[in-house]
Length: 493
Ligand SMILES: Nc1ncnc2c1ncn2[C@@H]1O[C@H](COP(=O)(O)OP(=O)(O)OP(=O)(O)O)[C@@H](O)[C@H]1O
Ligand SMILES: [Mg+2]
Image 1 (tube, rainbow, N blue to C red):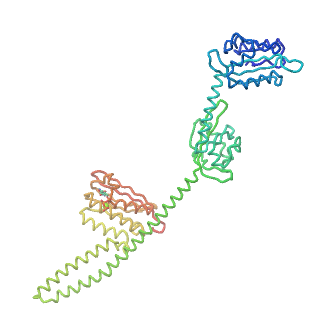
Image 2: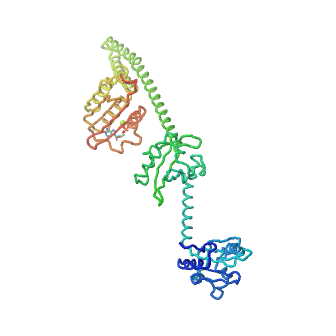
């Protein structure tokens, strides 16, 4: 590229050579004679810029061509040069082109001769049109500022590193999250932001990533899931890394967020769920125990009393003379009331809690339940309970019993089933309960029917036992309920 002014202390021949080269390069050239007070302006200079042709040989004319806002700066430089204070000068300013538009130029000047006092006698220089360059630079700066704004307002930390893994960008969020000012980390190795145990492995990770050619990916796969604050505190992060190739190398950008609050909230939520579940278990257990107590009282106390009443009534009947017909009729009515009271007491007692469950275990209780329901609804039940499940302890036993009870009732009430299969098996650490009917098949909408609590109850029981449940209806072919319940260590037999 051509120098925009001749070299210092150039002789006339050198200045001529420079002049020629500058003109060839498209620069406008001027040559001022400060003693004579005249100026030579090259044809290129005059052709391009809006000089007044009649005054073009007078230096003062230049002012009119320079943008009013830039004039003071221009004149300051001129004084520096003319007084001999500066050897050369260079300034960017706007000049009026022939078409009247203002264009950015680079104006350069150099002293080419001095008097005995050191003041300039000859000054030469050039004017280069750099308008496009200037505009491009301004646009670049604008977009740089815009980008900076985005980067700085981002909630996530944005950190760029060069190929040597030194930090080249550190936004505000990064400052907030890590506790470092950008000035403290710029140019430092990225490892300063990582827990020590990652120091060795990490650089190879990034290198490996650089060679994959992938432009971005979450960092989970890199297993860098925690970072280190200024004080040394470690914290969990979600991070992704991306790379872009620049002319002179690659840069990697990491976007990350501090997820310690999220993780803590998740932990607390899980804990609250667990607490709630335990509470439900406790309250269900308490209710079952209460039911069991009332059921036993009904059965033992009331049942015994009713039985003895019945015996007394039988004795009365046997000992009442045949001609006492009114008394005999009353006795018959009393016996019928007594019979239905006994039946009601049994029913209420069994509904509250099948005592068989406590006395004979789950298998026996289910057998009784299945027999009762099958008789009531007129379907056949294939019941299979394996050995381990037959004697499973509380709270599983009563929950399984209640789930089967609700499922059988549903099969009777809604399915119009002819056959129902009830299988209870221990598989590994779980009890698997399957209730399958061959009825009309539950509709998807019915799985969460408003105002219905049977299926909700099943789900809740399964939930408090930390199990899982699937309910599936096949239209016209039946409904299947599959429940899996983990066996607590102390509940196995
Ligand atoms: N085995 C089944 N076959 C077909 N439809 C069923 C079956 N079980 C349940 N449904 C349908 O799903 C709905 C919801 O059942 P759910 O047991 O929750 O309530 P419910 O039996 O109607 O009332 P309840 O609260 O007394 O149990 C039922 O109303 C019925 O329409
Ligand atoms: Mg129901």
